[in-house]
Image 1 (spheres, rainbow, N blue to C red):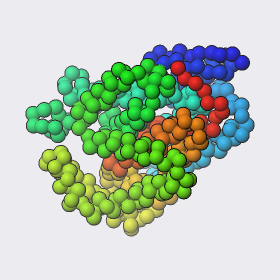
Image 2: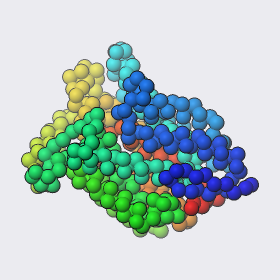
Image 3: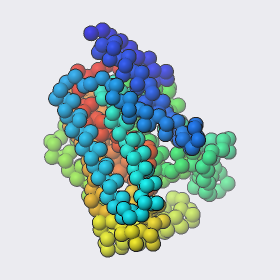
Image 4: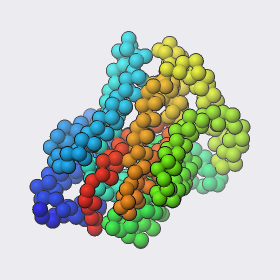
Length: 431
């Protein structure tokens, strides 16, 4: 066995103790995977026809994954395959439950089936390529760059420096006549909220030994400034709230790491319970929420809150009548509500019913499970806290946007991969 190094431009140096053959083959394929990750924010820019670079790379990378070196530890390989199959199975079942109503309507069935297949590629790819701490560490650095692309772009759009294919402006929430509320490369604030939660915790918890140059104090300061600029440009409560919750969960989990397993299980129970009772809370306390939102964002924010609360209330009535998902007749009447409601769990209940919603909840459980048993190694404990906090960030974000976006699937796949990464021995070093 010989020491080798893979130098990835802009990502730092990663030292690996395996054979040169393993590093070169895996490294070349992982470079293609890295290009795909970095291309995701630019998915609205076509390369060939209507297809963007990430659209073209995704199916090719799935096929190329066959060439990846096999996991040598048979026990670890078996655990990985079982977890991977469980994740794919839950995703597939959720998709099938959502398609049942369209069985006799091929004009609607085909585009939805293709969308489920495409989303599945974005969900599965991180799980195929993230096999150990080496790749997990590089993925974290890639996500820092992706987040900066989103943050800086929204700030530049607000300033009027750049124009993007999709633009959305609203009155400023930081003061009359100041920067308008805008969107950047990510056309919804949910994706930005998920990324902000992940990167904020990453910058707090990781140093140069894990992040390379990105972990240097001065570079961290620049990154925090970029995050702040993006928040000023987006003026999104979802981004702010999701970031604060992720940071709070990170510190809470660090405190719980030395507690008994029953306490960690209780935290998972809180996530699930919150998903169930959240819609009811916002309906019952709707008037108070509207007043609070108005104080934060002005009359336009108040109007938005009123409209969303009304849509939640209407959707919940439909769910009570059809808990297994809307029939095609009901869907034909309420398609706009079912497709665009700003809460992923309610959207799932409308489209996929209780069974499909439970399947997606199972994916969140898999994501949480990856960080719930970190062992005693300090490095793994830190990573586990990041995984749990990032799961919370996704959980919060999807309460306020339809979810099931490219970035949500990529992040869920990334976090679920930690289920087998945490079991890898020995722990590698990073420089």
